[in-house]
Amino acid sequence: MSPLAHIVDDDEAIRDALTWLFRSRHVDSRAWPSAEAFLADWRDDLRGCLVLDVRMGGMSGLQLFDLLVERGSRLPVIFLSGHGDIPLAVA
Image (cartoon, rainbow, N blue to C red; front, side, top):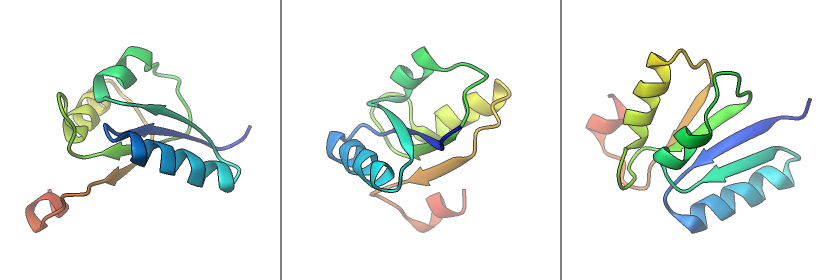
């Protein structure tokens, strides 16, 4: 079974760059433009890891993370943000 990354970011350029990066390292990936789009495809048996933008229009990455935890998701999560600050980093 090959590695798989699920990318959720509202910035198309970031999604494309991450998809290219993962492909260059032989990691399969799927990308979604929003938390809502990811949730529409989410299943509790998804494998891999989630690469998640913290701040997106609509549902934020942190809200998506909280919802997935409530649903029992065990996907490892890597958070990304282009707008980081100290309070966000320690949240």
